[in-house]
Image (cartoon, rainbow, N blue to C red; front, side):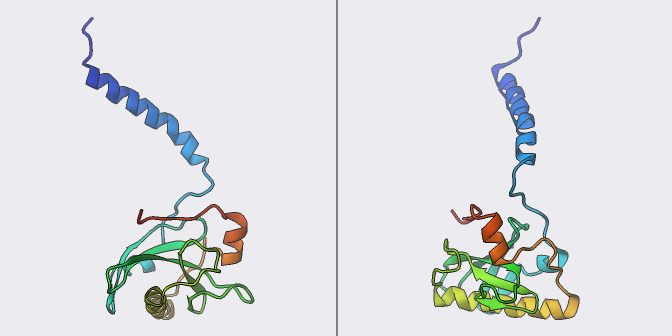
Length: 157
């Protein structure tokens, strides 16, 4: 019997390990979902800001990664707007936008990032008026904090 090279055995063991982890990952409470098609076109320039990436829906929010004119990077979470609940930095008819700064809606955000979130909201409102934006799968901030308090995403680190 011919012995397999050590590298080949490692690859096989790695493949078995990856296959064994699939059932564990499938049971996670926070799984990304694909975003709706209208948001895919957001990536690119937005006035003097830039939308770097629109991520899949996670824990009831769509994370939008942005870059400010000064080069700083920040995340805006797009959620469903709620009447009588916490007010976002910017809103559209059905959406509320929050700058993800590690707080629970109680941390002040920098003026540069707030301006970027408001520009994003204006663009989303335009898309909403032209094509409609389904809020399916999105949570309000209150719902998200109640069901996904652990969902603090730090995509830039």
